Image (cartoon, rainbow, N blue to C red; front, side, top):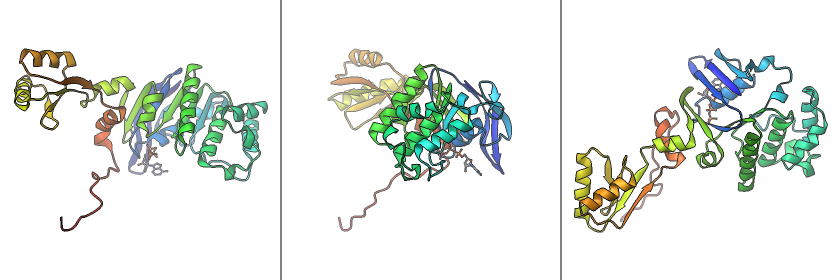
Length: 314
Ligand SMILES: Nc1ncnc2c1ncn2[C@@H]1O[C@H](COP(=O)(O)OP(=O)(O)OP(=O)(O)O)[C@@H](O)[C@H]1O
């Protein structure tokens, strides 16, 4: 279990992390989400003792990282896959890590096997591809057989096979009862992998929730009602508006209705003699729900994409 208590980090005037209090439980994959610059990496660095909090505390099994006798046996982290000696072989890198943490050296071959690097273990780590480097970083995180693992953007640069492998690995680690804390910008991936979500923006907690709850809260969940007669749909729209139900048009033959169950829309249309060819509920994606939630905290937002080609004389 990881516990954050009023965790704060200031860099001059910037509050990178601003009073974060939360618990990351064992036996679950907890996704850590937030726009660029939200403070995810800084939080993770404080949990692993690489940065010192300006105020508050980050506790690993109830104690600050600096007080852990054998840190790698309690928490394994992949924060920066390039943080290794490029001239060393993968095996030598892991052996050095094991020795400095009182971990039996036979674990090296075990974790090389888990991450699928056994056949290249003698090669210089500096010559590894991005994906191999990520796997080696994960091997380092697993070396001490820790009860807590933390990965910062682990699927960065991985091919689909690697992405699937990491997904399975994280779910397996959680099923073994470990605490798994993972940051990612890939919402589709988080939707498949995470049980719980912690969302931050500008260093502050925005939501601590489950994937399903976050999606259910989205205003983009809607019932779509499609029919052949625009005039009839207009009558339905007027009635819904009277009842203060948000409704908008999609073209001239479809209404998007928010806040009503599909059965209620179908029954109302039936009562009002409005012919429908289709009525179905459409759920927001995690990405849409997340974008809605964090819209106010995006620091480095870009304007909407404009056409990049100009056509003349048309
Ligand atoms: N060493 C530092 N010195 C000054 N400011 C820093 C330092 N490290 C981080 N920051 C600032 O703290 C804020 C949070 O950065 P952080 O890297 O933790 O965000 P993040 O959520 O991990 O972002 P990303 O998704 O882009 O990786 C940013 O405004 C960043 O510029």
